[in-house]
Amino acid sequence: MSTHELKVTSRQPDGKSAAKQLRREGQVPAVVYGHKETPVTLALNAHELSLLLMHGGGRGLLVLKQEGQPDMPVVIKALQKHPYKPRMNSVDFLRVSLDEDITATVPVVLTGEPVGVHVDGGVLVHALHEIVVSAHPQDLPEHIAVDVSELVFDGAPILVREITLPAGVRAVTDGETPIAVVNPPEPEEAEETLEAATDADAVPSDHGNATTAGEAGDDSRTGTNDGKE
Image (cartoon, rainbow, N blue to C red; front, side):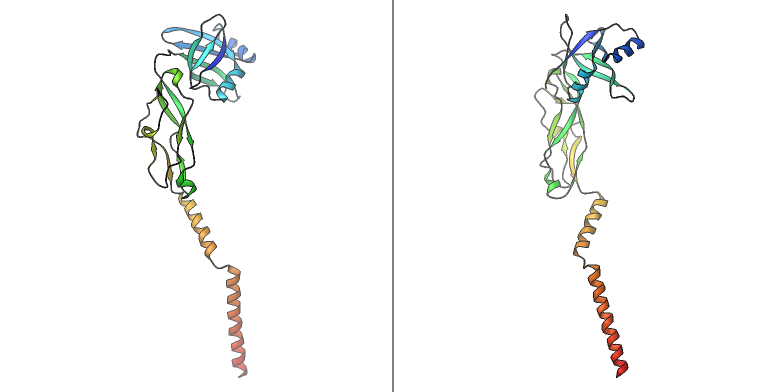
């Protein structure tokens, strides 16, 4: 539920050529809108934005800081990525009020090792990777941690309604949605395990061949003796 800051500067919306020039200078064009106020065009440092996104700061509350202007609380509404270069082409920010709930998508992080995996050999299935939540902007978590340690082999899944959310955060995603479950191994995996166990219990093939050869040798000697008699 940390709040991150971004330094921004004003810019004039002079079209595509001006936006391209900003990018060449290591800047990212941005727009702030919402709350029935006039949209504001800004620019921000591309490297600082990359660091913010890399460390998960793009999902919660941001404070845009511009010299000579009041701080502006926002959330990222949309990011436009370059089609093949590792950079952002533009950012859309949404103004927010610290006294009003907003809806946001938050990633789900599984913690712990399920009993059904390390004891019974089951397979952990991470079924839900994101949860939609509602909260004041400053209360939005960067992720939701879900402990899966108690999941048993082929048992009931953990549902959205069963997890504990931070104070002030409410789940919008259907409470009956499964988050994680431990399933039996896939048929191919189970078959490979069975084959491995069977091979371990079987008599080595060369020992079997030696026994057969010995038996054949006994038969041939018996035949020779019979001929002599």
